[in-house]
Amino acid sequence: MSGLLALLDDVAAIAKVAAASVDDIAAAAAKAGAKAAGVVIDDAAVTPKYVTGFKPARELPIIWRIAVGSLRNKLVILLPVLLALEAFFPVAITPLLMLGGAYLCFEGAEKLFHALLPHADAAVEADFATGDEKQLEEEKVAGAIKTDFILSAEIMTIALSVIDSPDFWMKAGVLLVVGALITVVVYGAVALIVKMDDIGLHLAATGRLGATKALGRGLVKGMPVLLAFLSVVGTAAMLWVGGNIVVHGLEVTHLWTWPYETIRHLAVSAAAAVPQAAGLVEWLVTAALDGVLGLILGAMLIPLGTRVIGPLWNRVTGKPGAPH
Image (cartoon, rainbow, N blue to C red; front, side, top):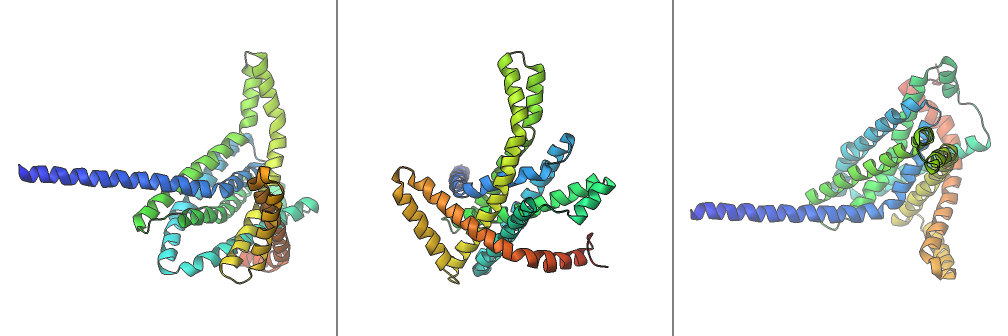
């Protein structure tokens, strides 16, 4: 009997430890999610543009495919890679993030360049000309997952940086929870945004009250404006998030601290001038200056990306546009 009581006591102790661990993981995940909120918003703003131009019936399937790709990015690739790098080669994390930030700057600058100086993309034009919507969808999904990878890397790295516990399994649990929950929140919000016009049509057609029908009509009229706004925000997000990653990386590695110190000084000075909204002003100035530097870096990378890396990648992968 005493052996049984001792066993039950051990089981109870283990259960208490497990419960405490779950609480610790939940608390750390909440802290990490809050810390990464800015990048999460950027991720949500970037994604809706990838379903623009497709038939309504394909919108949710495309978002689902991107969400699955995002989960794979976070949980299958980034989680083990970040844990391994932190354990065995932590000095590599910041340079790899800087490369990702530079890519975001390049993509944001290229999209701005396309908007200001519209010109045809040969591969996309060929897809439209042949009616190959499936090929176009594949390219859009691949591009979305590629961009998501960079933003997910930033989210997961921020989450890792705020975990106080040195325990490996604690870190893995927090990253697992953060990665899964953020993906659900971001792509659930994106799905709601892109289907809001369909919800509006349904309300306008079936609503019993005049106010309900008016709300439906307002949603239908307002969604194109919202999607266009989100497209602009998404492009800006690439520039300011990418610029912030590069600037912060330069400061952390001590390669060039001037940009970070200058931006920090200007942001703090601006915030001091408006004490009633100091936090907001500091964030706005920091984001704006990070975005300007991101745009400059991205513009400098456009020739390298389009004339050297892009053609080389096409040659290696055999994609359209590759030299024969």
